[in-house]
Image: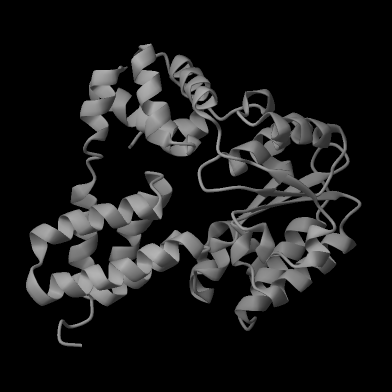
Length: 336
């Protein structure tokens, strides 16, 4: 998708969230800056909900919401972190820092500055299940030190991965997968805002296609609209029967085969971050493309590794890490 993602362009307000209990917590947190642990499965709207909270709570949310995705640190090298323009100003002149110290420094700096408007700012730590325990202890101290002017929101798939001192400092907000009717309403809201023609059967199809994953349903609607100009049952069925990114997967596999892992991961990032697909979808497409590229021992090896990756995806803190492992294995010589 070259146009802006509908998940960003038509982001929900708090009143649009399809989880009633969560709406109540976020509405309370607008007037009272509670620390929150927002937890739930992938794609249910955790990050979108926190952005909606910031939009309602801050006069200048672009500056008073600080988003730190844990994958931006723990899944990257020191060089990649230093070269990220979001962190460069914090790390300039600190070339000898360890990776852990770099992360702690960025977190402290982000929490320490005064809000641009109002009396507090919001710091979101996304995908927080990947935070190591030693870093969580440092996070706890930062939360204590800057509690007066900083609201911390920790978004995670697995709240059990957080240490008790952090959980005890936050209200727990469960973001469950919405039911079918709520999914239909969510897709209808977005499609209407996009000004695209639709019918009820198309909305029903996309709600079922998402199966509780709001991001997947909305991006499916966008893919359908861009391909067919409308969101109807026929258009959605014809479009989503084939997502249409086999060319990206082909390029990714070719790079992995040549041990060009930087390019391979770049294509993987396109699928995860630009296109919004989750690990299970990408793994399925990789296997589909692999069947036309490999045979015999090499294909059998790939399926064996894919089985391990499929299992790890259910427990993993990062789809990117698990699929990156698969790409690394593809690059190994067949006789290894």
